Length: 289
Image (cartoon, rainbow, N blue to C red; front, side, top):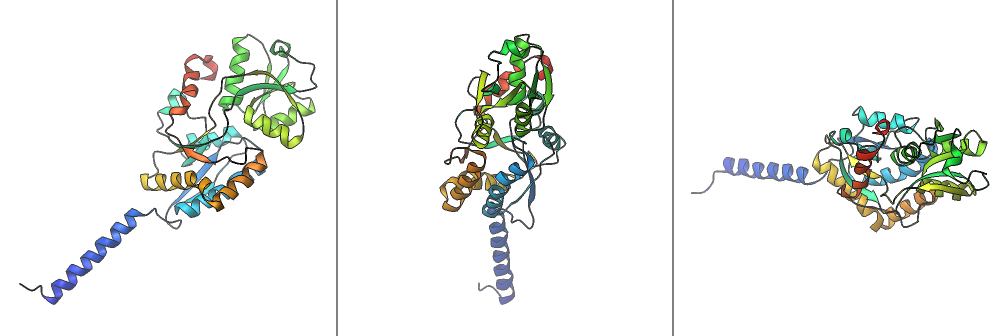
């Protein structure tokens, strides 16, 4: 039996509406209706942190169709406080691998493909201090109390060896090295990647008194509150950035700013690479867990 004209028009309209709904579900929401806060930990000063990340997240926002906005605090501890207060949605950090913070539901989606990093305790090359034991009763500065690699790993080493030091916090690595150069501190606890970068930027050589096992670079993580379609769109944009000429150029320029290898890019991560971070908390001094 032929379909009446009115019914045919209604049937056609239903098909078009269904197709439109399906198309909207298949693509990520655009920047007009999806906006998220992105907080990388303060590894550098605020200005350099913004110079590094803003071009990257502008590119990712454009490619993913999901707007990311940079949100950083005055110090690394302030930035982590935003995360713990549920004020941000995407983070670049290693501050979320303790047993308690694992329960918050953050998911690891990517990391940078940089060489392994190490926790280190450093002095200037011309310092008379040549062993950890010589740091007894001296001032040692760290980026902040949340810094897993730069503070918790390195200070745990001092505690385990029963070497008493005067602990100071500077807010980020650049601040710690400024205190070292000024003589306010005799040593710094640092992430080797940041120590190497500072040394190359400033033309100052450092002496390593101690360093940890090899560890992976920080993780790109997403809150459990971000819908999967937005998560995957942002993950894909980060990971595909290194294969796109425009993205590769942005990454190379950003890497040169902080003296990372020019080929630095983002790769997919499931979080399994961070088992060493989680293991640290099982044996760390109680005050650092």
